[in-house]
Image 1 (cartoon, rainbow, N blue to C red):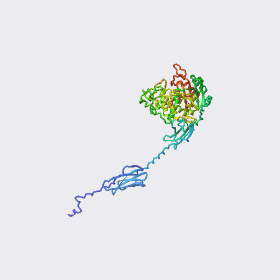
Image 2: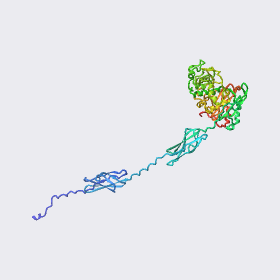
Image 3: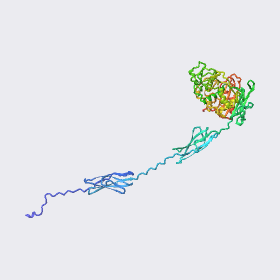
Length: 593
């Protein structure tokens, strides 16, 4: 039968199941690390990435929240930049699609506000503004001014003040105070500067103070000595009290002077304060007074030396001139003197005992190399007298008569009753037909005329009628020249300190050998202790002259013939006169000290 064969038969190999596609996975996305920036930095780099399991082509899209002020350079790029206009917290979302599914990731970008600008620098410190005060003028004897300085400072800093002066020498009561006083050492123009410092900067201002010399006091001058019957010989006499001097101390000085006889005067401010005379003198044994002439001995060097001052002023010679250029026969005789050394001797050396000659006053031998040794020499001064006679071509006695004695009112109307310069007894009495004089000695003079010479020097060469001697010559007379300071002193025993105490033809107290006499004192000094003493700081002149006094064995006494330059013999005369002025304290301060 065919019945048993009905229906469809089962397939021998049934078909397999069709393949299945795995489900699509979204891309895995990384937006990058969170970032923080601070304005003014305004850009970040967004470094996104993604991978897709199926390897599908991916598309990228960046979005941001919030969006204000944010610019993404390329929102469709995995890696791009974003720029910010303002501070804030910005969330960036990176979406990546494979066409069917999308993956996302976020990154936070924090944009911090720009830092606050630094505070402005403090204003630059300004220097204090200083006002030293108004210029001032004072006149001696006033020596002090009030200073009213001040200063302002913009920052109100504490100020430190300091006063200084130019030239130096001004004393400030408190140099660190804006308002203080200043004391001046003498006349002149001074610049005072006030500085103020605020710790950082300094300001300054200056004022000028002019210190004028004292108004000239009335100057007193003696009248010409024309009346022999007038005791004071033309001088105005005042009582010591009128010029604030102590009469007892003046008398003490006079008593000491009279132990050697003779006469003397003390002149203060041009007026006669004290005088003395003792004993008799002369062929008629006349009573000694200020009109009695005595030999002045070596004081002639200073008195007759005024001729040197005139020669210098007239341009007839100079101190540095070589003696042989003015007198070709200088220094010979004696013939043994070396012409080469003679040719190096200057006028200054002759006038300061440093030419090298022995004391002998006639034809002195040259004992030392010129300029190396201080050796008291009468002969050197007599050679100087011959040189002066040559350059003037005139008798030196006539030079002084015309230019000094007539002006000072002595030997008036003519004659030799006050001053006489005798004929030369040491050297030839004539040179080129002109009478010669000695500078070693030879002038006889009275205390009156000596005091007038002293007053002429005290007034810096001025007399009532005008300038007589040049002031420059007065200055070198009373100032030991520095050229002789280094010289060897040939006789320290008899001339102690001469190299630093001897000026040009005058002795000085420059180194205070007389401690109780001012250092500006200077004097003419000769045998028998004839003296003209000038003390400018005290406005004093002292003259003293007399006969030889008896010597005392083993002691140097006033007026003795065996003269030397022992200053101690002068102290009992000058100390009480200085004390009589009321001078106290440290009387002598060495010159330049």
